[in-house]
Image (tube, rainbow, N blue to C red):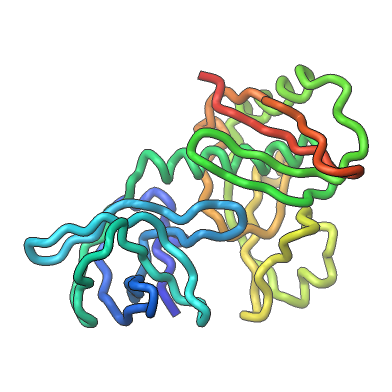
Length: 239
């Protein structure tokens, strides 16, 4: 399986890797990926790879059918041969915004403690869909609560739980539409806050900032009706 370098250090911006395969669609499978692959509502990373005198722009990264990560070139081009050592470089500004928004959505699930039916992340905004028959009465209060959690500068950390332990604690899973990846024996948990200050703990495979204070000020945007029982809550950076 691809070594997930972004999992080891979400702040790593450049790394080496080796091409181990090509996909039929023209993707480049590497033994160790700096690029996060599209999943869990978070887009795949973009950036570039280089070898010798050649530099190739990477538009995104995706998971292959057998669970590896394939880097997708921005334009059709001759691929580096299998066995080639490459240097991977992230579009760091875009990745960091994904990290900020993803962590902000975890905070949103704290201030709106309802089951989540969907979600999406971009470099400009994010949204969660909730099992929420009626829209919140006071959006300004929700926004203030969200920014209060940002201002507390809580530590964001990871831990691991076995499949069996997670099955025995279904309350850890907030998402109704997307189930945590199980089957490998363990599942990654992302927590916000430590000990008595912990405010959230849920399965997640995405990239996050190290502390909530890194997110910056947030604004709650439109709250949209998406079906009889669903409300979509949008959040934005409040520049």
